[in-house]
Image (cartoon, rainbow, N blue to C red; front, side):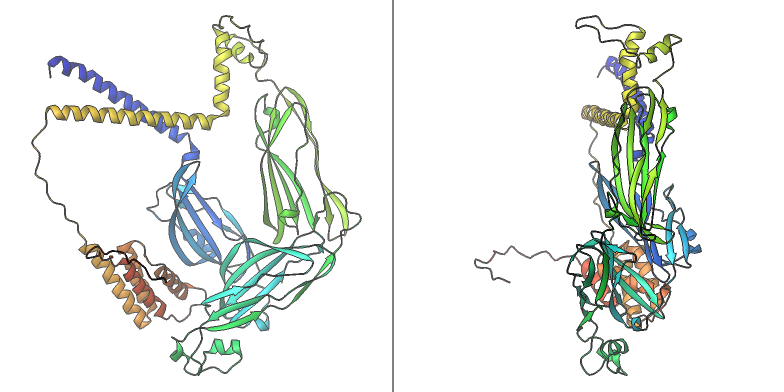
Amino acid sequence: MTCASFASTGPRRSGLRRAMLGLVLLAGLLAAALPAFAATLTATLDRTSLAMGETVTLVLSLAGGDSSTPPDLSALAKDFEILDRRRGSRTTTVDGKRTQVNEWVMLLAPKRTGTLTVPALSVAGLSTQPVRLDVSRAPAVDVNEDRPLFVQLEVGKGDAYVQGEIPLTVRIYDALGMRSGALTRPEAEGASIATRGEQQTYLRTIGKKRYRVYQQDYVMTPQKSGTIHILPITLKAVVPGSSGASLDAEMARLLGRPPSPQAWLDAGAPGREINLHTDPVDVEVKPRPSAATGWFLPAKAVTLTGQWASPPAKAQVGDTLTRTIRLVAVGATPNQLPPLTPLAVEGLRQYEDESRPETVQVKGEAAAQLTQVVSVVPTRSGTFTLPAVEVDWWNTAASRAEKAVLPAETFTIAGTAPEPTSTGDQAVAVVEDAPEAPPEGAPAPAGTDLVAAIVVPALAYIETHARLVAAVAAGLLTLGLFLAVIWRHRAARARRRTLRPAPARRVPFRTRRGGGEAAIAAALDALAAAAKRNDARAAQAAYLAFLRAAGAPRAPALEDAARDLGLSLHGAMPARWRGRALARAVKAERAARRPARAPRGARLAPLYPSEG
């Protein structure tokens, strides 16, 4: 290589460095301006209302952020007791991009009644929004509910009308520890019943007994007026049983037999099958009142409100205004709410962006809420009036027809800019009073006309589609960085070919497996020993040591056993802990970590393989 070639590559190399540095800085600025691709942290509750003595699950979800530091949960201690906590991860796809989502799941028990707030929690420099939770008083304890296992059907309160929706709730209260179970669906002649939502599982304390509650919600739609008879629901369950000679106290009470003085001798006996039933329930359905007109919406109270994201009076032609209309009906269900369709107004384009029906709590009562988001785009200047929005509804408390009204709104839209006073203003004013397009073949405009014809529309497009433009720019910058790295790598490889050094002696790599595997094995041995002694504290310490060594269990049984261990130690009603389930879980974990043996030799498949 000559001196001239070295001299020519020096400035080229420094120029490449400066170009790459500029690309990196631009990519960083665009990344900061793209909140849609930044990490997000959300807090959700599986329920928004519950009774005192029940539990609720809080999930913190971190998408695309650093999860090495766990969240600080000390702020929860004021109103909640943390009964259990666990961590997991999953992968989700948003806009074609795979994102890692880390989750922290906490089982919370409220300490008091009223409206509680899950405070803002922080992870990786991000904070969640506070979440509201309504906690009501615990219902009165029924004498018959002091059983170790029972099933209950509950019908929602309020008047029932034809074609209306009646909420039904089926709950299984389990203090025995069911091994398996199957529940029949509710049925009623003269009404259709559909499942609503997913099954919920939580803990509830009744008297001095703690139950695991399995809850499933349904909605019943009567097709006729009169009495609707809901048939009994049957639960077929397999519960811990006995060998026949003796029964434990809970099982004896459930089956109506005397308890055994030594029920622990039958711990390994097979389960016992039992059938439990709910009581039949009758629901009185009223016909639709003759005074009700239009859409029939029976409710206790209805409110209709509207809100603008920004004042319409400050908008100009072409701006997008966002209007949110919210309809709330106490004592109704989401499917009973009428659609909120915006009425056409000349000079305004209206688009329904989102319509979200949901169930909410209003002063401790269940209510249906419809949130309608409408985008309003003025196409000309002038004064506009949005008509009033009216919703007819039936007041079930006063037995009369009423109307909820969102008043009409009047506002004035100005042009895109004031009258031109200078050359710069003329360039902006062209958007409002643009001249007709020049005839085909005419020369392109020059000077300020060129700016008005090309630059201003381009800037308007960028402002309207800022997120799309930023995403495309970020993609182009990333592609440029990738091509620059490849080019530099090929240039460096070409230089290495000219001056290739002697190959260095390769040192064999040895993996170290003794330290980590030994710590995991020691922790599992300590877990097994603590389970054999029924020592809950020692088992908890050993499980923490296992998590530090292994990170996470491979066998789901070990995670379930650890969760039961935590509930027995830190629950609101601590119970005596037995280590049999944990011992079995330790065996499953060891089996999951045992490496598979490679076959000694290839073996031909049988010509006639045996079935089964």
